[in-house]
Length: 310
Image (cartoon, rainbow, N blue to C red):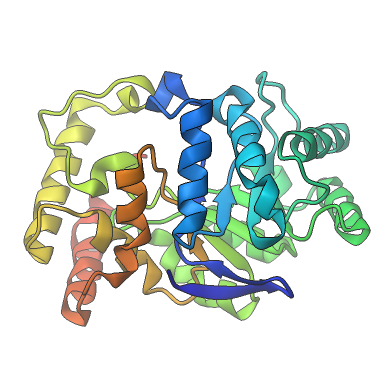
């Protein structure tokens, strides 16, 4: 495992982290149940992963419970990021009272007395513009030592620009992968500010594993894709495979992201120990400069003009 970002006096964060949306999540991802989830998280830690990303509404609240139980004996050696805004019951919590309730609930479920990072979970634009008291509240918790960093989870380059222009945050979590490369244009500014940068959706909801094509059938949350969007993505994946000369895309897709120095950690989801081991070893993939350049050129010349909604 490789480590890059110096989080605090505790040490550096693993470049491959653990996205915990799937823990206890049977409805969308056929995720591992409680005992399976605990075993998976412990296996991740054994393989050098020390960063875990979760949220109150992941797995209807089970994700935080599983992480708390699995990591309680090594709590001082790991970094946990959780979110605020959407409660496990669907409650809207982008309020000062919501922040208080969410943090207290997460501390309890995660079996800890502090949170390494807390971020607002895809908040509305006016919040990103700083037209709210929420960040003052988070700053209070930071001064008290209840949280060590705070920030936002966002999706687009436009949102990243708004955040950097209006907020003074410690953490940004953003969607970035070979297919969605827009945020790279703001990475240098993020690096200059020493912002802890978490990359979410690194495998484009499974497409960048290489296992889907235009004939794939999707269920759950992935039913959102139209046939047109599926066909376009399938063409993109086919061309990426040709650039890399491989059918298995997981390792090169994660290695591609890691090559951007502003990136602090990448949080692929993982449902099985096989997926875990593949993700953990992905940084050893021999991605060449020629391939890196070709993937970026393919984005600039084709992907960014295509219809590939998340």
